[in-house]
Image (cartoon, rainbow, N blue to C red; front, side, top):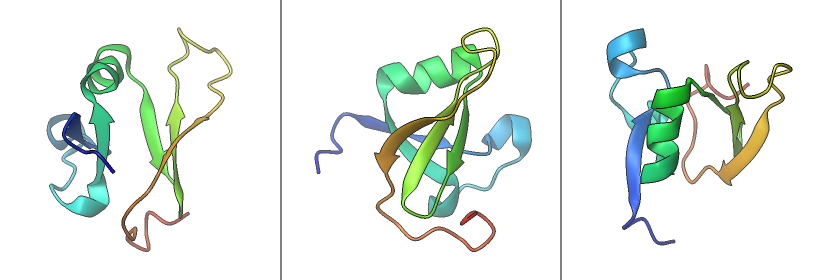
Length: 81
């Protein structure tokens, strides 16, 4: 796994959502995707073994979740939905 070109992103944003700064609230993204998430307002929903990206309505009015990479850590119980 090459993590040399990724950035940490708060799933529940630190500033906007008062999200905690811990591994259970983080996901690694490439710089392009990290900036796109912030710029366009994508949502991130972690599952037990995968991460789902939900596009904002101006990109996909139906907001169909898109599968991202696999998680490489154990999720907190309240996130494992």
